Image (cartoon, rainbow, N blue to C red; front, side):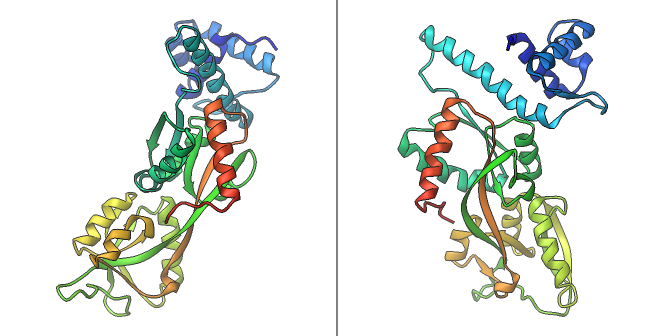
Length: 304
């Protein structure tokens, strides 16, 4: 197979910009020449990488996988040249993570701290974003790993996954001056709800539960956000009831600042999972995954 480095760079530019003319301008070539180079790459790989029938253009399923391969090929070449020139240490290519906001603040540091014992993940980059955007980042090959929740679309090829533990989302509210909950899950007046954005992963999970209980309890949304930490702050200020994951409220529950409401029927089980594309990653990312898989095989889980 005869691949030119510039073709890979062209492809990555087009994958980012999703527009032939803008990608050609970024690469300082005419649009016809740019189009020919993309065609040459497709012919060399024997893969249709670009879906030209969409506006803006998009990657085919094979193109999304190849994006990871192209990115890693270029990085490995750069790392090898840096080593030859004495500018970098072997295996120093950073590992790219995408994670939800709440996991990036709590569980991802725990994971990286644990894996540092094995001299991996010395360098990493983290994109802390909405869960749905993190899923898109993995699907588009913009990250090596995604730390997220149990997502059906990622539990099948071309993805691989490692379960890292289970947490619970539970309804909580602030305490009153006597140390009792400000609110109760009881019928009557609509209860103030600090809710996740309906389109977010957590929002969909909570909304499913609330719909099932609509004949018993009524809620009045007073705030909406995709950020767990913001909803926690508002709950601590006594503004309403929020469904929050245990890992985000451990200290607040222990000291009584937040009070759990209801029984197990009001709790939502959520698996925490590390995902990757099932194509070969760069050496550092592969070593990270291999060592973590061995840890999981003997029962290691994230502290939740």
